[in-house]
Every structure is written in C-alpha cells, then in structure tokens.
Image (cartoon, rainbow over all chains, first blue to last red):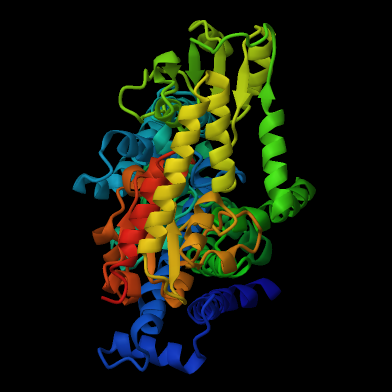
Length: 341
Length: 280
C-alpha cells in the first residue's frame, strides 16, 4: 500500500518544492545581495516597513526579482495545469497548452498589433490584449471546426482542427511579417519569452485569468478521471462529455492565452510537468491537477533562475531553457509510455 | 591594428565581384539592396544613376524605393530593373551567384566592423560609380565632423553606456561597429562583461543593468518598439539608474544606429549631446 501514503505526501512535498524554488528565485541573480537583506527587504515591502536595502539593490529585489518569481509561479502553474487538462480531455499524452492553436493565434494577434499600431501610440499597451484575443479566436475556431464534424471520435477531430487552424494562423502571421519586415524583431523578442522584462503590472494582468482557469480545471478533476475511460463509457456513467470538454478547454485556453500574453511562448512546461507527476504518483487527475499547478510553478521559477544565471550577466530566453531540459526528458517519457503501451 | 586595417582593405577589394562585360563605363542603372549603400550613393552624388532601392532604404527620401527586398531577394525581380550594378550587404538566397549568372555586376558590401571599414566602402562606391573625388570629399568631411564633435565633448573617464537594441535588453558590445563609436568617447560599455557567448549582441538582464548603473542610455529601439526616455523611466526600478535620474537618455533613429554610412556622424553627435546631461 505504498501509493496512498505517497499520494498523501505528494501535495505537501509539491508545496515544499514550490517554496524552495521561490526562495532560490528570490535569492539568486547576477547581482549578489545577501540572503538576510533579501528576506528582510521582501518582508518590509509586504508589511509596509522600511526596507533595509536602498536604491538599486532594493529595486532589484522588489521590482525585478520578486515579480519575476511570482509571475513564473503563475505562468508555470497555469501552463502545466492547462497541459494536464488538455491531455485529459483529449486522452492524448502529447497534448500541450498550445494544441488547439493558442500559440499561433497569440503570435498573429501580437504581429497585427505590432504591424498596425504605431509604436509610439498609447494603444501599444494593448499588445497583450491582442495576443490574448488572437489565442482565444484560434481556439474557438478550432473548437468550432473540430466539433462540427459530428464524428464519434470528437477528440481526434478537435486535434486535427487545432493543427489546421494553427497552420492557417501561422501562414497569416508570416505574410503580415513579410509585409512589415521591421516588425520581425519586436514580434520575435515578444514571443520568445517576456519574463525578463516582467514587473508587478504583468502579475496583476494575468492573475485573475490564471485563478479562474485553476478553479474551473480543479473543479472538473473527477470528470477528467471518468473521461479517461472513453467518451461513450463516460457518457454511460452520466457525464455530459461535451459540456465537460467545453468547460475544461475554455478554462485551459483562458489561462494559456493570459500566460502567453504576459510571458510569450514557453515550450514544454505543459508536457514535462504533468508527465513527471504521472510517473511519480500515478495518473489520477484528482491529484495531478493541483500538483501540476504547484510543481509547474516551481519548475518555471527554477528554469528562469537558470535563464538568468547560465550566461550571467546576460540572459537566455526562458523558452530555450525549458526546451533544453524538456526535450531530453520528453524522450524518456516517450520510452516509458511505450513500455506501458 | 595595422594588419586588421590591411585585412579590411584586402577584403573590400576582393569583394568587388566582376562578372560579364568589363566595367568600361560608370554604371547608369544601379540597384541598391543595402540601405547603407543607398545613403552613401546619394551622398557621393551617384543618386541619379540609382534606378531602384530596396524596401528598407528609407533615406534619403528621394531614393527610388521599391518593393525589392534585401532580406529575401528575388533575382528575377531585380533583373527586371535592367541594372548594370547591384549593391548588396549580404548574400542571402544566393543572390550574388544568381545575378552573376545573368551577367549583372554585383558589389557586396557587408556590415563594416569599424569606421575605417565604413570609409573604405564609401570610397569603393565612389570608384565604381565614377565619383571618386566626391566620395573622398564625403569621407574627409565625415572624419572632420567626427573629430570636431569628439574634441568638443569633454573627456570624462569612468563613464558607462548602455546601448539598447530591443526593449528586452539586447545590447551591442565594444566589438561591434556601434560599440567602437562609444570607445571613441572613452565610454565603458556595460554589455562587454555580459558577452559570455561572444555573440557581440548579448541580452542583458535588468538586474545587471540596474547594478551597472550606466551614465548614458542610448535607445536604438525608438522607432521599432516605441521606446523613449519616458518609457525607460517608467520601467520597474529603472529610476535608480544615473542615466535616468540625469535624463541622459538619447533616442537615436533605429536606422541611423544600425547603418554604417555617412549618417554615422549624426550618431556621434547624438551621443555627444547625451553626454552633456551626465552629472548636470
């Protein structure tokens, strides 16, 4: 009976991992600031006291590092939970948060905003909104196309619809970019990951959507376990398969779109994290979904620590770090899942 | 130093790729796919021989801008202008070989590494287009104006500069063309220490920029990405930087900061002006 004990310990251990990751994230950076000073400065800001640090050091801790850590938790947790949810509703271990075209849609939205809103106009602040809208439009289009086939294997046609929409949106993005060559640089630096320039503003923007997405996904965790046996079997057990799939996809998409809007495209988090958890504690969504949020958050914070320390004082795009560790890991997951075959 | 200079000259000479009919006369139908070359051609008085320039050649305003692309060049579209000389800054898509096959003369002028290389390219354009004397005059004029600006700017040791290429803190080290200009002013470039991968264009972390506390910030992402003194001041934590406090932030037109033509003088002057704001 190892599993129940392991399962009871899983969530506390997950939280411990998250807290350690956040501490490392707050303490490590290209600029050395003492452990005590960092912790006291954070405490002082939270409780409205005088910070022991001054000027640039205080700004580095409170305005640069901490929002980056908090944003990493929110974005990592959202992407991991969205990935796990997609894998559940589509019964496809390769599903990731961008499966239904969210990435391509966000890319098109951002490109259109960069190309057609003058760079000095105040409306440029709407860029995250444009990415959010693009991601949502792409997923809605994919969902509409996929479910219009009326076929029995609705999940397979949804995935195909996602691929189709993504290809179409990517083509449009490339076309617009070719017409506005000067936008390429801004669009790519925007898409490649924005944690490097994040502040509290981004945290405030993304938090409501992330929370909404987490709550809806977690409320559906038991249905996802039932869906795992198949659409028809789940329907026979009294689950409204269509409704559950729509709600979970909508929640995961809102979370993903908000994450993309503030942090760009971050690869592999939505795949690595849920699969690691499955290997460690099994596949039940009751545990998998909350754990994905906690562990995904910690994972992205650690990846971001690497992004800003490996070539310090330079930066690596965070997507490079997650994919560099994600790709080999994914190879292992593939081998193991074939063994389960 | 001397052998680098020599190498630049040799490279510049070998880059003159001659093909087809011998250049008996000066070219009368020039196509420029290099915005820098376009500026130089007009500066040395060869503008009337230019029949088409690429979509990025936005200076001078009277250059015959077309939809031709220097990044994704189409040999057929270029040939349609019946050029007798095509100037390019790179060989993307094998454009040089493609044009040679059509017996069109091609001049490849890649990004200059320093001012010496930039001057050599202007002189070369002069020689090829029959404006040698005017080109020499342009170069002499540039040298004189840069020297004057440098002389007017008080030499201050221990000043640092942050050159911003993108709003996510990509920068350029002293090894780049633009970086060498900062060296003329004796400025220390904060990107140098961050170039761990020797790319010459490292991405800096915001933490590092804050801790380096640059005396001057030069924005080369004003046009592309809407950055300005006010957007920089509004970034989280940046008000602690000396350059932000002293308003020693200068916005240089993106194209001026990314080309190595005659307008480099404008860039030198902009940097000089920004230095006046340091420690008011």
